[in-house]
Length: 393
Ligand code: GLA
Image 1 (cartoon, rainbow, N blue to C red):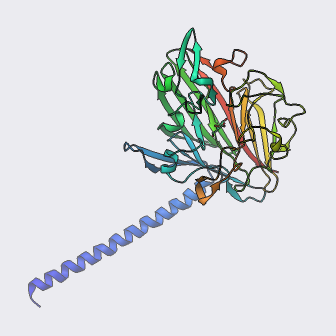
Image 2: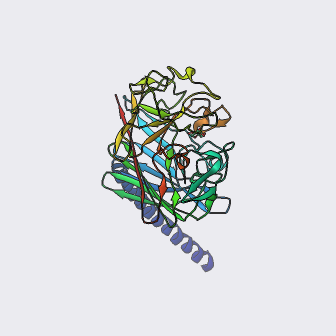
């Protein structure tokens, strides 16, 4: 063997040895990684937040998905596009988990047309008649995106913007803080509005949503979460039993604008003061497409955090309680879903595939002096706390 070849063989041996050493090191690392995973596993029984990339906006900005996990294994996933809840996994009475919200598993569908699945809605949730309101003697014209009316913040509401986002973890709490600066004149609204929304998962199986907003000019604000729930995780929601702590509601015209009256629910299909299945009287409601799409005037009057809604899905035993500081609940039974949208798990969303209980002020409050005011002035802070608590029975 010539000397050159001997040197070559020696180099190869060294290379192989160092590859083996590297391999061992890697294996050791992997072991410590799997130890980490074990400890992460033990950690999974501790509340945690992880962040991944969900997609890219057409202008190249990253869209993130946050996964919040609590010690009971409950999982909430959120994206910073629209400050949207994309998944919510809760146990049934046997401990089996199901994703109980409607939505998509990809950004493209969120960017496309959809009826506010899981989104944070603003600057003003629900309808403003003809997209006009007058504040301090000045009339403002907003974008109209629902027939003649303004709906859920307009063409590009808060559900269609990319929020800044930041994970927060504390003892017994996993959270994401979303912030957005809505510029003066956006969708026609006056004032630069600085908005913060924090979605928190607690070890008590609560999804808490806390909102804050401040402005530099008098404006109007009415934020809400537009989750579509189905506590069975499939099928329709007509068999869910619901209680709404409201003796009154606000009747609407054919374009779903309140007439201004506050009417008792007693002896009408609107009465859910005692738990009733959603479907029990739904056919008695007039209108096209029919179903519930009404604002309930909560007996609490807003302000203090009070139980507003309790929903039970009898087969799974899953229960959702909603507590809020808001004076109203928009109870909407997914009437406009018509089977044209296919969501996560290849599910086709038919009429009544989910229900919404949107905690907020009343529709068209900007034009109704007898409704609680949604005006926000410089120096004031808008605040709302709404809690969705999950349990079984
Ligand atoms: C709200 C409204 C409904 C409908 C949905 C979105 O719940 O009250 O009329 O616009 O949002 O489709």
